[in-house]
Length: 275
Image (cartoon, rainbow, N blue to C red; front, side, top):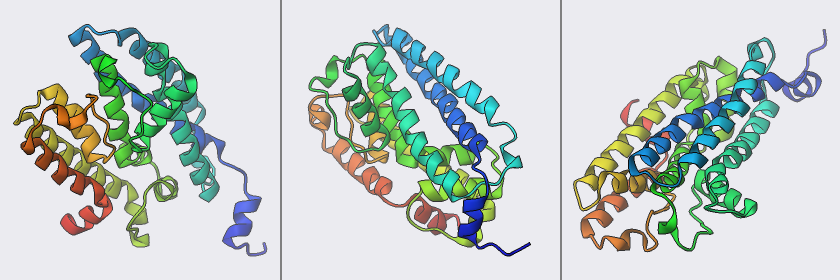
């Protein structure tokens, strides 16, 4: 059998559709966790976001469950760079599409292109917004808007790699195409461990930010919403005037500190602290 270099092998082998389907399905179901949190907030405040959030949860399950079932047995096929690039690209499109549904179905952003823009801006932590009156949205929808930035801040694929036991190469494929910054080839066999540590650092910083904001003039709801967009360096706020609404030097100092943490590579923080 003639020797094939990596590029020739990538060309000749088949495409692992099951792997792509599995990751997309898991991401769809993964969003349900955060949508349920927003649904609980809607019930607590009795706001107008309940029906839209419930419909979005059902849609995520309808989309995600078949894809997960289809992706069973993906380890029986090879996974390479093509699958990694396609998976990451489609992942961003899919979660942004599903993420816009609370805006669209609730009529809070009735235009499809604008709702998709708001969702993509959140998940990509861009921070741009089409909203002119942010405070007009229900609290549960504003929480979802903040959560999209929190999810995007760590990277959607990192969550999946950390929470799902992908095997060796499959994990490294999606991880390498999602993350930026420091990489180490010798760490590839334990890429899932590294992703878990990065996620752990991200969650701890988020919790600390919430607690410090809550200790100031913010309520718990305000602290959670602003901490989620601060640590992700996205910048969404639940107020039209952003943090100028509270006029607090303490809040500005805390948010500035955690924005600096959020702007630092979590891979770098991992190697500086854990390793």
